[in-house]
Image 1: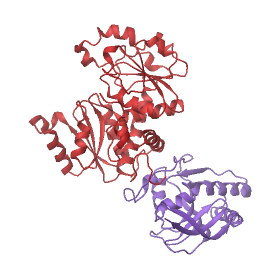
Image 2: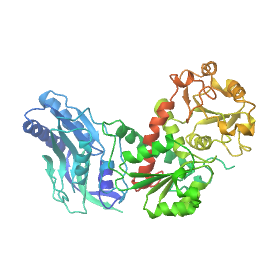
Image 3: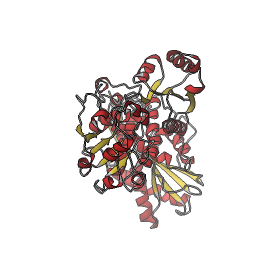
Image 4: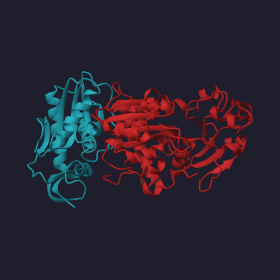
Length: 188
Length: 327
């Protein structure tokens, strides 16, 4: 997860050095649990809901959200993963390679897709994800769940479910791992 | 005659794909990278809308001085699925007929603003020469007896897909190795990935020197088959029969054709491959091409996804072969 944040955020490369722990593992679990409740509330249940994690940071979070939804409602929600490399708007400007094969569970026509990512920053990854989703069908609605919203949007995109709003400087790096969320810098 | 993958193993060429050796300082890493990426493009190809916007605004031109249907169509399909624009330059209808030189042809095409040139030519070395003149990336789609690197990549991918990997596989390449650019690229790729390659052919159809080729040689197909995981048949190039390298096609088939009887000698799990176009009844019996282990159609299908991966790596990814960059 940390790897992805490094690759998609300038400066590319270097080593991440954590400065502050902003969420503990327990905080993340509570936030996941709350977001699961909010997803159920917003959609009046889980009928037609599909979770899609964005490679790579969103994938484990989507699995954790699905587990929380199962425990709350007793329903197994389909979970997929999406790699947006082929849809990015900075192809040719910097190295872009997919990290894993996209796996979308079935046709999305008429379903409510909840995109899941670890950090929402410029919004460009989500823009690419929205383009990618249209190639898999016409979802009834697309919602966005992120563990951390760090601001600095460059596109008119906002999340529907947020683990934590975290004001940051542009040059800081947010690192979401299984055991917590750190704020720090890249050191070349 | 140079060793497959030689030379370029030392330099690599991050901008072009002329020989298998261009795939980076470590050829095996470069091939693995292409195969990983191909997995993603196979997924794209299986969708209801098998198209991604990745190379919008890029132009890929096919410059074919030799007949080809499958390779040209495969490259054009790959480019279109990446949303690139494609142009075809076929020599039959071009100014080459009026005596235009290769260099002028390339400069004319370049002036139109292209990003990649896919070249096929009957003479070895033409794609490398074109690459020296052109700013665009050059992809070799087969030059003379030299190389056909995308064929080798799709062969590696097909073996990996159907047999779980290339390393350690015993691969027999059977037939006209001497005139085969496919064989040269395949030997380079298969051995780089750690396969054991045996060339099976009459002495007249082997290159004059095999110095430095990391392969075994046999003139007896029957004795090789039982210990073969992949039987790779080369096309018998009928147009070369005038050179009297084999007494007759019938005799060739009797000694080196994969007949139904011979195919029974292969282990149950063995794959049967052919780069196409097949001469059914010559190097491969019609019935054998339809068997369980025959993956000739898979080779064609994978060809599109592999060529998407190559075009993406050269034009879109911003990384170099064997990508040290960010991984």
